[in-house]
Length: 178
Image 1 (cartoon, helix red, strand yellow):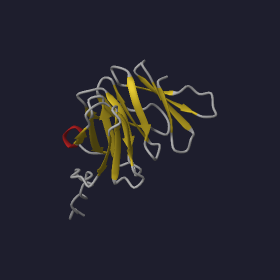
Image 2 (image 1 turned 60 degrees about the vertical axis):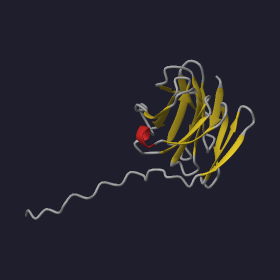
Image 3 (image 1 turned 180 degrees about the horizontal axis):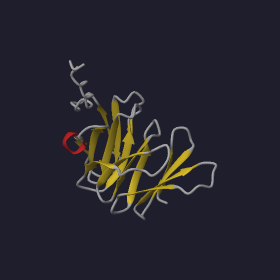
Image 4 (image 1 turned 180 degrees about the vertical axis):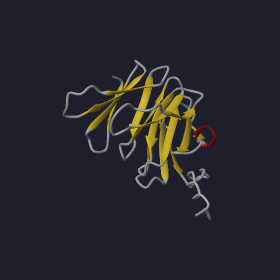
């Protein structure tokens, strides 16, 4: 196991490593972990959403995936959030769970809105001079902090031109039929 993370209520643990799998372990029981498999190379980072209903993962295959966790049964296929040019080093959710940040070994940092047309609407906000070691949203989700391998610390205000969340479909027209 390379890295571990708790969900917010401390009832589940996320582990990921070189076997290309992300596992979700439930605390206090002996059940087998849920195995998430989509990455074609080592999984290097992962995080639970604040609600615990989703997990985001990134890896050496340069992909970022969003997994929606069902209450029961099999986990459906993930959604590809973004394909980077370098290994993904860190992912994070904003406190409201609406934004995903991903960062890479090449120094790029991207923001995606959950539920958007990810590949078309992911916004690159910066490039640090070297690998990004850590990223974190502020508690109010209005800022993002990143630290690079050379101890470069960057803080962004997220007053960004992010695409609006998808609109709900309009109701069907009323029918005059009896």
